[in-house]
Length: 637
Image (cartoon, rainbow, N blue to C red; front, side, top):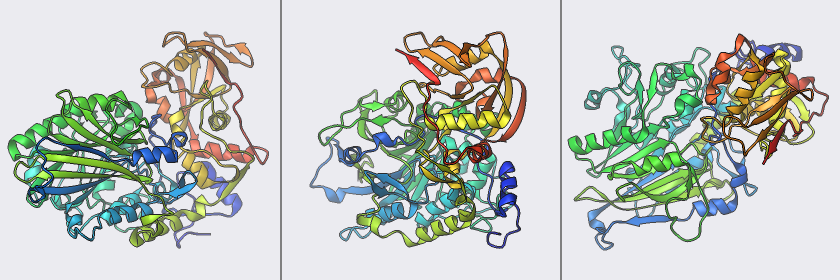
């Protein structure tokens, strides 16, 4: 069997699956890309379906409004209406399948239909000329197979289909060095990058996941050029038609931004600056090789630098920030959410330090909703939004700009859920639907392959102690793959739950989409204690590892750094002086998620890919298989 007539051989990335393919008479295509080999993990960088109820969606949809004392309702002729449609954390969610209150939501074609409808107003025919679609990072990475196996190129092309006629692919002149750092002088060279057109209706920033495979692959994805295992749906792959901006990611040696820090848009003579940023903690949640040679600067300082520069040199007074950092907002009563009810001190601190001229912050990373006004330290009201994740919502943001002062004098926002069974969702966007169908067809022969039968649903949801049934299964698979005493799996690397019934390759890929390799190493018993204590040390929240081969007890009343009471092997306390073999993934082995003890591991040897190990383990179990919370982790207090 072949796919699209491509030479019959198994995927290069699936070392163990290759043997399974031959045994089954199945030959996947060599045209599939290797998925990201670098791994990111952040507890907020995942969907929390327990909090995603219809009540939360209704709260998110309530309108938040602000008007300055200079706003005059009757002076509409002196005001310019500008619309922003904001998304975040798309994560390659081309297909549907998500549900809210048992109603279908999202998918690229449904999201596109909503964005198109939001720009349609019978009484305002030129609204599209005053509308900008923006995204706040993690547009790619940790993606489903129809995007990830095609190196996330279809997700870039999805946004290309939303771009207007002013958005053009970059002029790839032979004399240009596309990988040199961006400089302020580049803003004066209009021919340098045709994506910078002031009337192009789309702009994005980078999230931590855009660095999963390093800056060179990020540049290829944005600037074009076929991947070594491509071409895929487009030949040659031309990259993005729209600009991607980031003010706080700089070259370590030169100190210059690696991407344009900002882009200036123009509407009816009014200029608006869009400035990008990503959380400065990115180096702690991306494998070091993914961000080698880069520095991540303070977000607010970087944003303010360009606000001041653009205000002083260009006279710009309207600023929109696209930032991959955010928090969760609690539900509330009434039309306006008071400030200070966002869980996520990082984003609150950033907004508090922003320049007074920043009007809107489109945020992301937390996969939740935000729609509120936060005061900066000078008392200026800044509108901040976040639209859940994975194509299930968008932020409908409206600005009224005084034509004389070019200041925003009124602003409002709602978070709109993209229900697929009502309104615009009933008629998918045809060009986007065709793109999605092509991507699905390309990967279908592989992702639909059944590898096992699950008797029960296996969930990422943690017990109060931090244990999960799916985490136990994955940790067991990794320990079995390398035959070690123990295995430890970081929770942020588990990206989806596993439903009961037939288990396909695609479902297991969605659970572990990063393509991390396993690493065998040796730790002393004391280092195992130290590793487990690091679940709380220098962490923004507890990162409870999923374990195999051991059990342990921790006490929440003990101080951070000394919460592990006892670690046991076969019911007996481990010897802190003894040496034990351990399996982790390469992200953790490199000190990811601040588990720096693993950098001390002795006799490190690489193993198979984590996905391969999980598939082989599932197939080795009596069918149907199951897993459960067994009390491997015990919490006191």
